[in-house]
Length: 409
Image 1 (cartoon, rainbow, N blue to C red):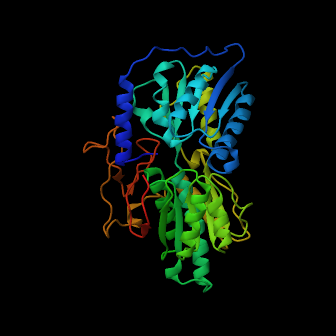
Image 2 (cartoon, rainbow, N blue to C red):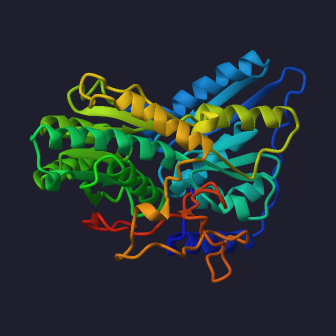
Image 3 (cartoon, rainbow, N blue to C red):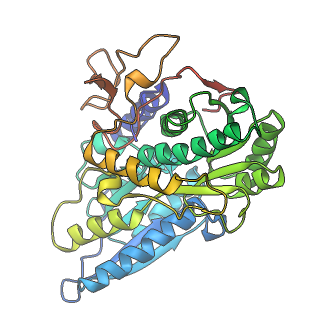
């Protein structure tokens, strides 16, 4: 993800101050070069029961284990669940290090500043922060960032939603003005803004009258708050619910109101078969496989890793054909191919306006990790180029057609 928000800038400054304090180095246990076995820690904000965010990471962990095993590499996993985005994350990183982990993966955005308080004590351990950005520019060799071009999957999920709403319009079930999406977002961070904007643009590409209401819940994983937000959006007249939150409750809320839904991180059609059309997710197994294999082979783990649909790092779940609009599967294939060959730019600036004007300028993070007047220009060749300058999203533009009901930073 890339963020052009002031939140990231403050985070990077905080990290910089944290780096100034020195401490005694503690060497990581040496790799077992005779058996090709590596010990990897995975620190998770939730657990598999969320059937969403952490479940998707565990799915990737299992996938990577099998791929690495086929290459003769064995992984001894140390998995810690329900870690807070607070000082408990420091403790969890220290525990994983002291338990002999040679690679430690932190799976939540808010983990990174706490992880960075530990890394200097263990310079021989590789620390990975998923979905964040400071580790890519902190000057350390043992810290890394990783994310994927999930906005591509969001766009396709939006296409699926838009086709369904256009079908409702064509059938006379709703009017064009009633094609309103309700979006449950965790925080008003670039990752979330980038995702719901891509989703909206996908929906509007096939349903021109669509509009969107966004409700932020102020948490990555609060099942009750996510459900309440989805129900409130339904009561405001939304006929489609989507989400950037960790649980399945927006899906069940949509089904309880007799409206439709698209999900994130996991196929949610089993728990909401009459509502949930499709989901998109990051295949973390791709990254885990590449990073762990590189370590075992004595190669460098990329400082900042990002891949998309063309590499299998972003995938769509199975389409719920029972409720999807006719022709949806064919349209998905068409859009996937266009994204893969570059003929479709998700953030094509001719497809949206900001305050009634075409977007001509926006910052991306520069190579020094600061958003300044010298930062890289993200808008060129007729598009906003997301996740090209860093893995983490940096699209924070509020485009026309999307109304924020609140903000949660």
